[in-house]
Amino acid sequence: MNKLPFQLGIHPINWVGEDVKEHGDATTCEQILDDIQRLGLTGTEMGRKYPTDPDTLREELGKRSIRLVSQWKSVLFSDPAYRQSELDSYRRHAEFLQSMGSKVISTAEVGGSLHFDPRRTPHEKEVLRLSESEWHILAEGLNEAGAIAREHGLKLTYHHHGGTVVEQPDEIDRLMELTDPSLVYLLYDTGHAYYGGADPLVLLRKHYDRIAYIHLKDIRPQVLDEARAEQSDFVGCIRKGVFTVPGDGCIDFAPILQELVTRGYDGWAMLEGEQDPAIHNPYEYARRSLQYMESLYQHSS
Image (cartoon, rainbow, N blue to C red):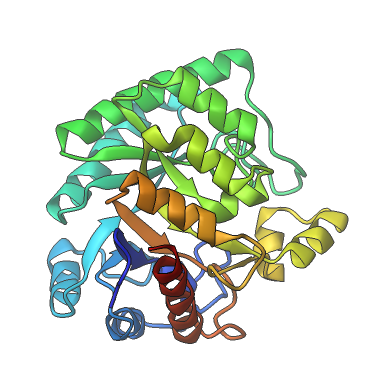
């Protein structure tokens, strides 16, 4: 049972990889949801093993008293040729999440990304950073999508993300500067902050007023150093085990948690590990991470 003062859920990526498909590929929806229920958590994000039919999904979640908090939505707004089709797709996504009672949409630009941009070819080696005009085109698209989200009672929460064009601290700053604060919010991710070169606590304090959703993820620094030395790309880093759950890596969550408590954060936060479940048992890692987070909270209060 969650003893923290904000709403705590867990992402199914702990059990089944999204970017690394072989991670947990044989795991079923029932296994994931049963584990979440055993952990005493009541929120999850959409995962690729969950049923896509809303009624079936609602039934599976409902019988375990779990709610769907969000679902990732890739967008390609930095290229104006994609704008209208992307907005149409975003509207359908918002309609689905509204029907499930969700309040936030995890949103990330894939233009320029090595792995997620449909215009890229497999032999390319690095993320293509945005030009000045592309930054403004992206911001316009996000503002329009944010308006669609608002129409459906949702908030667009932008997920700064490893291996994308909004990854590094200055890129997060730029996105926040160019977008409308009433339409575009921030999905604050501790692991992706560190991966992208930011101090997670500094990022939290700097952009707290824009944060509407949180992912709590940790980093194994020695694995990250090895991966960088080998020039591994983002997916390669996941395969090597760069990410883990809070309490198992190098990020100090005590001041992060204290900041959230002091400021009265009352939205959702998702525990995330994004590692090979065959090596790192998802239920056990999550259970220990919950104990770690709760012990930090007890010491701070």
